[in-house]
Length: 304
Image (tube, rainbow, N blue to C red):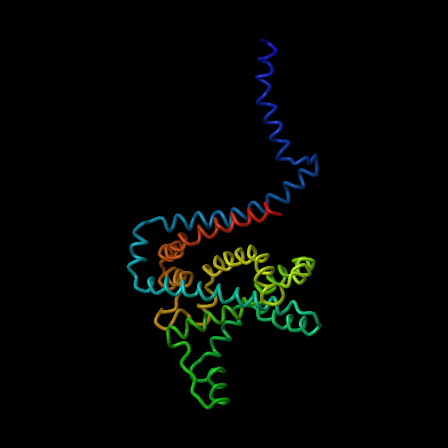
Protein backbone atom coordinates (compact mmCIF):
# COMPACT_ATOMS: atom_id res chain seq x y z
CA UNK A 1 0.00 0.00 0.00
CA UNK A 2 2.80 2.36 0.82
CA UNK A 3 4.46 1.76 -2.55
CA UNK A 4 1.20 2.31 -4.44
CA UNK A 5 0.54 5.55 -2.61
CA UNK A 6 3.98 6.82 -3.46
CA UNK A 7 3.44 6.03 -7.12
CA UNK A 8 0.02 7.72 -7.11
CA UNK A 9 1.39 10.85 -5.53
CA UNK A 10 4.25 10.90 -8.01
CA UNK A 11 2.12 10.71 -11.15
CA UNK A 12 1.08 14.41 -11.36
CA UNK A 13 4.72 15.40 -11.20
CA UNK A 14 5.58 12.94 -13.95
CA UNK A 15 2.76 14.29 -16.12
CA UNK A 16 3.88 17.87 -15.59
CA UNK A 17 7.42 16.88 -16.42
CA UNK A 18 6.30 15.10 -19.62
CA UNK A 19 4.20 18.10 -20.64
CA UNK A 20 7.12 20.41 -20.01
CA UNK A 21 9.37 18.21 -22.16
CA UNK A 22 6.73 18.25 -24.90
CA UNK A 23 6.64 22.06 -25.00
CA UNK A 24 10.42 22.30 -24.93
CA UNK A 25 10.57 20.05 -27.99
CA UNK A 26 13.86 18.52 -26.98
CA UNK A 27 15.61 21.89 -26.72
CA UNK A 28 18.03 22.32 -23.87
CA UNK A 29 19.68 25.28 -22.20
CA UNK A 30 20.41 28.27 -24.41
CA UNK A 31 18.63 26.67 -27.40
CA UNK A 32 15.32 26.84 -25.54
CA UNK A 33 16.04 30.42 -24.42
CA UNK A 34 16.74 31.56 -27.97
CA UNK A 35 13.61 29.76 -29.21
CA UNK A 36 11.47 31.60 -26.66
CA UNK A 37 13.16 34.89 -27.55
CA UNK A 38 12.25 34.43 -31.22
CA UNK A 39 8.71 33.15 -30.65
CA UNK A 40 7.47 35.64 -28.04
CA UNK A 41 7.64 38.74 -30.33
CA UNK A 42 5.62 36.95 -33.02
CA UNK A 43 3.04 35.87 -30.47
CA UNK A 44 2.81 39.46 -29.24
CA UNK A 45 2.38 40.83 -32.77
CA UNK A 46 -0.24 38.17 -33.56
CA UNK A 47 -2.21 39.00 -30.43
CA UNK A 48 -1.93 42.75 -30.96
CA UNK A 49 -2.78 42.89 -34.67
CA UNK A 50 -4.94 39.79 -35.26
CA UNK A 51 -6.64 38.51 -32.13
CA UNK A 52 -7.32 41.86 -30.47
CA UNK A 53 -8.75 43.59 -33.61
CA UNK A 54 -10.93 40.56 -34.35
CA UNK A 55 -12.33 40.40 -30.83
CA UNK A 56 -12.76 44.16 -30.67
CA UNK A 57 -14.61 44.13 -34.00
CA UNK A 58 -16.91 41.37 -32.77
CA UNK A 59 -17.63 43.42 -29.67
CA UNK A 60 -18.33 46.57 -31.70
CA UNK A 61 -20.80 44.72 -33.93
CA UNK A 62 -22.54 42.77 -31.16
CA UNK A 63 -25.49 45.16 -30.76
CA UNK A 64 -28.57 43.71 -32.56
CA UNK A 65 -29.97 47.20 -33.21
CA UNK A 66 -27.08 47.86 -35.59
CA UNK A 67 -28.26 45.13 -37.93
CA UNK A 68 -31.79 46.47 -37.90
CA UNK A 69 -30.38 49.77 -39.12
CA UNK A 70 -28.16 48.06 -41.67
CA UNK A 71 -30.89 45.88 -43.18
CA UNK A 72 -33.31 48.80 -43.44
CA UNK A 73 -30.83 50.81 -45.51
CA UNK A 74 -31.73 50.61 -49.24
CA UNK A 75 -28.07 51.08 -50.14
CA UNK A 76 -27.27 47.87 -48.27
CA UNK A 77 -29.65 45.79 -50.40
CA UNK A 78 -28.03 47.08 -53.59
CA UNK A 79 -24.63 46.43 -52.03
CA UNK A 80 -25.48 42.77 -51.38
CA UNK A 81 -26.53 42.37 -55.02
CA UNK A 82 -23.34 44.08 -56.18
CA UNK A 83 -21.23 41.84 -53.96
CA UNK A 84 -22.85 38.66 -55.29
CA UNK A 85 -22.40 39.83 -58.89
CA UNK A 86 -18.80 40.80 -58.18
CA UNK A 87 -18.13 37.39 -56.65
CA UNK A 88 -19.87 35.45 -59.41
CA UNK A 89 -18.06 37.13 -62.29
CA UNK A 90 -14.86 38.21 -60.57
CA UNK A 91 -14.03 34.74 -59.23
CA UNK A 92 -15.31 32.44 -61.98
CA UNK A 93 -14.17 34.45 -65.00
CA UNK A 94 -10.79 35.06 -63.41
CA UNK A 95 -10.10 31.43 -62.57
CA UNK A 96 -11.50 30.06 -65.83
CA UNK A 97 -9.24 32.36 -67.85
CA UNK A 98 -6.34 31.51 -65.54
CA UNK A 99 -6.91 27.80 -66.19
CA UNK A 100 -6.95 28.33 -69.95
CA UNK A 101 -3.93 30.63 -69.98
CA UNK A 102 -1.92 28.27 -67.81
CA UNK A 103 -2.23 25.72 -70.60
CA UNK A 104 -1.04 28.28 -73.14
CA UNK A 105 2.03 29.14 -71.08
CA UNK A 106 2.94 25.45 -70.88
CA UNK A 107 4.06 25.65 -74.50
CA UNK A 108 7.82 25.30 -74.98
CA UNK A 109 9.89 28.15 -76.35
CA UNK A 110 11.59 31.31 -75.18
CA UNK A 111 8.83 33.52 -76.58
CA UNK A 112 6.28 31.89 -74.27
CA UNK A 113 8.45 32.69 -71.26
CA UNK A 114 8.86 36.25 -72.50
CA UNK A 115 5.08 36.62 -72.84
CA UNK A 116 4.64 35.22 -69.34
CA UNK A 117 7.02 37.85 -67.99
CA UNK A 118 4.99 40.63 -69.65
CA UNK A 119 1.72 39.02 -68.57
CA UNK A 120 2.74 39.05 -64.90
CA UNK A 121 3.49 42.79 -64.90
CA UNK A 122 -0.09 43.99 -64.11
CA UNK A 123 -0.06 41.92 -60.93
CA UNK A 124 3.42 43.14 -59.98
CA UNK A 125 2.42 46.81 -60.27
CA UNK A 126 0.99 48.30 -57.02
CA UNK A 127 -2.80 48.30 -56.91
CA UNK A 128 -3.43 51.94 -55.96
CA UNK A 129 -1.76 53.68 -58.94
CA UNK A 130 -3.19 51.02 -61.24
CA UNK A 131 -6.81 51.55 -60.21
CA UNK A 132 -6.44 55.33 -60.05
CA UNK A 133 -5.08 55.29 -63.61
CA UNK A 134 -8.00 53.14 -64.76
CA UNK A 135 -10.40 55.58 -63.10
CA UNK A 136 -9.08 58.48 -65.18
CA UNK A 137 -8.88 56.35 -68.32
CA UNK A 138 -12.64 55.73 -67.99
CA UNK A 139 -13.48 59.42 -67.69
CA UNK A 140 -16.43 60.03 -70.01
CA UNK A 141 -15.22 63.39 -71.41
CA UNK A 142 -11.49 63.19 -71.89
CA UNK A 143 -10.51 59.70 -70.75
CA UNK A 144 -8.15 57.55 -72.77
CA UNK A 145 -10.77 54.89 -73.59
CA UNK A 146 -13.36 57.27 -75.06
CA UNK A 147 -10.71 59.26 -76.92
CA UNK A 148 -9.40 56.05 -78.46
CA UNK A 149 -12.93 55.04 -79.50
CA UNK A 150 -13.47 58.41 -81.15
CA UNK A 151 -10.12 58.45 -82.95
CA UNK A 152 -10.25 54.86 -84.17
CA UNK A 153 -13.97 54.38 -84.87
CA UNK A 154 -15.44 57.88 -84.83
CA UNK A 155 -17.94 57.06 -82.05
CA UNK A 156 -18.54 58.70 -78.70
CA UNK A 157 -17.95 56.35 -75.84
CA UNK A 158 -20.41 55.99 -72.96
CA UNK A 159 -20.08 57.58 -69.54
CA UNK A 160 -18.47 54.58 -67.94
CA UNK A 161 -18.62 55.78 -64.36
CA UNK A 162 -22.04 57.48 -64.49
CA UNK A 163 -24.05 54.27 -64.93
CA UNK A 164 -24.35 51.64 -62.20
CA UNK A 165 -23.90 48.61 -64.41
CA UNK A 166 -21.18 50.10 -66.60
CA UNK A 167 -19.27 51.25 -63.53
CA UNK A 168 -19.67 47.89 -61.78
CA UNK A 169 -18.69 46.05 -64.95
CA UNK A 170 -15.62 48.25 -65.29
CA UNK A 171 -14.64 47.42 -61.71
CA UNK A 172 -15.09 43.68 -62.33
CA UNK A 173 -12.99 43.80 -65.51
CA UNK A 174 -10.29 45.80 -63.75
CA UNK A 175 -10.17 43.32 -60.89
CA UNK A 176 -9.92 40.37 -63.28
CA UNK A 177 -7.16 42.09 -65.27
CA UNK A 178 -5.21 42.93 -62.12
CA UNK A 179 -5.32 39.51 -60.42
CA UNK A 180 -5.50 37.15 -63.40
CA UNK A 181 -1.69 36.73 -63.63
CA UNK A 182 -1.44 35.69 -59.98
CA UNK A 183 -3.89 32.80 -60.29
CA UNK A 184 -2.49 31.86 -63.71
CA UNK A 185 0.98 31.37 -62.26
CA UNK A 186 -0.41 29.15 -59.47
CA UNK A 187 -2.33 26.97 -61.94
CA UNK A 188 0.73 26.90 -64.19
CA UNK A 189 2.75 25.52 -61.28
CA UNK A 190 0.00 22.93 -60.73
CA UNK A 191 0.18 21.86 -64.37
CA UNK A 192 3.96 21.59 -64.21
CA UNK A 193 3.71 19.27 -61.20
CA UNK A 194 1.78 16.66 -63.22
CA UNK A 195 4.22 13.89 -64.23
CA UNK A 196 4.89 13.62 -67.95
CA UNK A 197 4.46 9.84 -67.73
CA UNK A 198 0.72 10.33 -67.17
CA UNK A 199 0.44 12.33 -70.39
CA UNK A 200 2.48 9.72 -72.26
CA UNK A 201 0.17 6.95 -71.05
CA UNK A 202 -2.89 8.99 -72.01
CA UNK A 203 -1.43 9.58 -75.46
CA UNK A 204 -0.99 5.84 -75.96
CA UNK A 205 -4.67 5.40 -75.02
CA UNK A 206 -5.66 8.00 -77.63
CA UNK A 207 -6.35 10.91 -75.25
CA UNK A 208 -5.04 13.99 -77.02
CA UNK A 209 -6.11 17.63 -77.22
CA UNK A 210 -9.43 18.32 -75.55
CA UNK A 211 -9.84 14.72 -74.37
CA UNK A 212 -6.50 14.87 -72.58
CA UNK A 213 -7.59 18.06 -70.83
CA UNK A 214 -11.00 16.75 -69.76
CA UNK A 215 -9.85 13.27 -68.71
CA UNK A 216 -6.34 13.90 -67.41
CA UNK A 217 -5.41 17.51 -66.73
CA UNK A 218 -8.56 18.90 -65.18
CA UNK A 219 -9.26 15.89 -62.89
CA UNK A 220 -5.73 16.22 -61.52
CA UNK A 221 -6.14 19.98 -61.07
CA UNK A 222 -9.70 19.87 -59.71
CA UNK A 223 -8.60 19.87 -56.06
CA UNK A 224 -6.29 22.83 -56.61
CA UNK A 225 -8.95 24.63 -58.63
CA UNK A 226 -11.50 24.23 -55.82
CA UNK A 227 -9.04 25.55 -53.22
CA UNK A 228 -8.21 28.53 -55.43
CA UNK A 229 -11.91 29.25 -55.93
CA UNK A 230 -12.49 29.31 -52.18
CA UNK A 231 -9.42 31.48 -51.59
CA UNK A 232 -10.37 33.90 -54.38
CA UNK A 233 -13.89 34.21 -52.92
CA UNK A 234 -12.53 34.94 -49.45
CA UNK A 235 -10.04 37.49 -50.78
CA UNK A 236 -12.66 39.19 -52.94
CA UNK A 237 -15.08 39.56 -50.03
CA UNK A 238 -12.48 41.75 -48.32
CA UNK A 239 -11.39 43.67 -51.41
CA UNK A 240 -12.23 47.37 -51.31
CA UNK A 241 -9.40 48.84 -53.40
CA UNK A 242 -10.99 48.08 -56.77
CA UNK A 243 -14.34 49.78 -56.22
CA UNK A 244 -12.97 52.54 -53.98
CA UNK A 245 -10.42 53.83 -56.48
CA UNK A 246 -12.28 53.13 -59.74
CA UNK A 247 -15.92 54.02 -59.04
CA UNK A 248 -15.73 55.43 -55.50
CA UNK A 249 -19.00 53.62 -54.83
CA UNK A 250 -20.77 55.85 -57.33
CA UNK A 251 -22.81 56.89 -59.03
CA UNK A 252 -25.05 57.71 -56.06
CA UNK A 253 -23.65 54.88 -53.89
CA UNK A 254 -24.90 52.29 -56.39
CA UNK A 255 -21.69 50.26 -56.85
CA UNK A 256 -20.64 49.68 -53.27
CA UNK A 257 -19.49 46.28 -52.04
CA UNK A 258 -19.85 45.16 -48.44
CA UNK A 259 -16.23 46.09 -47.75
CA UNK A 260 -16.52 49.58 -49.27
CA UNK A 261 -19.90 50.25 -47.64
CA UNK A 262 -18.40 49.35 -44.28
CA UNK A 263 -15.57 51.84 -44.85
CA UNK A 264 -18.09 54.49 -45.90
CA UNK A 265 -20.22 54.03 -42.79
CA UNK A 266 -17.22 53.92 -40.49
CA UNK A 267 -15.35 56.96 -41.82
CA UNK A 268 -17.57 59.07 -44.08
CA UNK A 269 -20.58 58.78 -41.77
CA UNK A 270 -18.38 58.64 -38.63
CA UNK A 271 -20.21 55.54 -37.35
CA UNK A 272 -17.59 52.79 -36.80
CA UNK A 273 -20.05 50.39 -35.18
CA UNK A 274 -22.36 50.55 -38.18
CA UNK A 275 -19.42 49.98 -40.50
CA UNK A 276 -18.34 46.91 -38.54
CA UNK A 277 -21.93 45.60 -38.63
CA UNK A 278 -21.97 45.88 -42.44
CA UNK A 279 -18.74 43.94 -42.75
CA UNK A 280 -19.83 41.33 -40.22
CA UNK A 281 -23.01 40.70 -42.19
CA UNK A 282 -20.77 38.79 -44.62
CA UNK A 283 -19.81 36.26 -41.91
CA UNK A 284 -22.67 33.83 -42.76
CA UNK A 285 -21.02 33.44 -46.16
CA UNK A 286 -17.40 33.76 -45.05
CA UNK A 287 -17.40 31.25 -42.17
CA UNK A 288 -18.70 28.27 -44.25
CA UNK A 289 -16.11 29.08 -46.93
CA UNK A 290 -13.32 29.00 -44.37
CA UNK A 291 -14.58 25.70 -42.93
CA UNK A 292 -14.82 24.12 -46.39
CA UNK A 293 -11.33 25.41 -47.24
CA UNK A 294 -9.81 23.97 -44.06
CA UNK A 295 -11.49 20.60 -44.64
CA UNK A 296 -10.33 20.54 -48.23
CA UNK A 297 -6.77 21.36 -47.24
CA UNK A 298 -6.89 18.65 -44.56
CA UNK A 299 -8.19 16.11 -47.10
CA UNK A 300 -5.48 17.06 -49.59
CA UNK A 301 -2.82 16.71 -46.89
CA UNK A 302 -4.14 13.27 -45.95
CA UNK A 303 -4.05 12.15 -49.59
CA UNK A 304 -0.45 13.28 -49.91
